[in-house]
Amino acid sequence: MEFIADLHIHSYLSRATSKQMNLENLYKWAQLKGISVLGTGDFTHPVWFSEIEKKLEPAEPGLFKLKKKYRIEMDKEVPELCKNPVRFMLSVEISNIYKKNDKVRKVHSLIYSPDLASAGFETLSTGLDRMRTGQTSVTEGYDGEFGIIDVVNN
Image 1 (tube, rainbow, N blue to C red):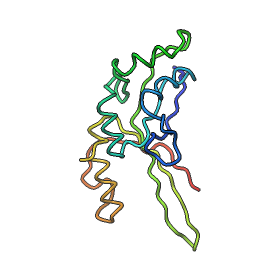
Image 2: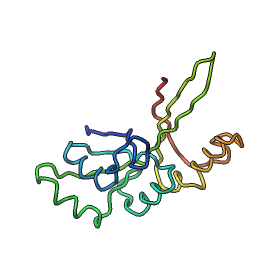
Image 3: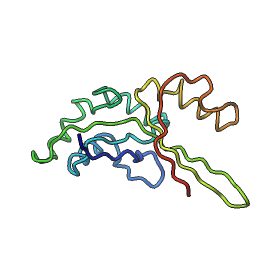
Image 4: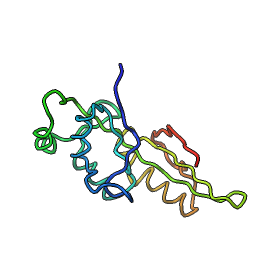
């Protein structure tokens, strides 16, 4: 099965990102561009995570869909020929910045989560925060599933 996906996006809460990058507009523009699966981006941001919990519901395993009450208005803006199901995958980019040989290095890791429980603040987000403050490694005490799919070195 072939489909088009965009798994590396950011929400309106990310720096230098359009304030229109909300779930409703992502849903609409995915249809207009022929995209079937979108990353949510930024799921470790508490405001964005709350919106994800409020506006998305489980679809197929590991995928979510926009709840009907949020799709209705957006569907009016999509031509019939473009209308297709859009699924969301929980995603976040973690930026690791360090210095080596007097040169700043950046590693951006894209992390995908299969469900809200694994992405929640009691699991991955809390682990990342503890790692950032030097309290622990990210996976210590973490028994959920998540996948690091892509690493880009700058």
